[in-house]
Length: 79
Image (cartoon, rainbow, N blue to C red; front, side, top):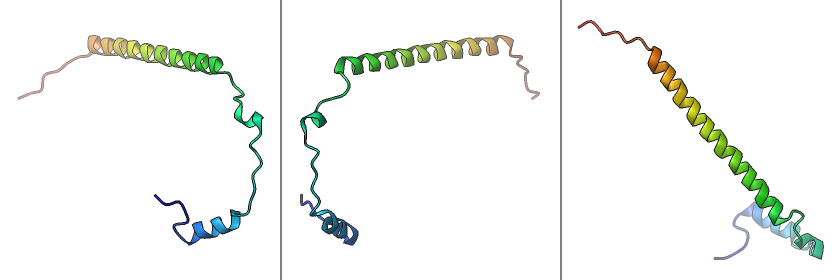
């Protein structure tokens, strides 16, 4: 698989940025600013609250379904 410009715009961009130099390879750029334990804890709390919301939504749907079916008045169609 070749890497390079595939069309005219890509070719112009490659020519424009070919001589640019980037100096962002310092040691601080490679260190995470958030600890893995904090991230996992936040993800766990988010998943737990979403799971709780899904359970409550399911229970509410069942209650509404039960109320609607209990008070529904069915009428037979004339034939």
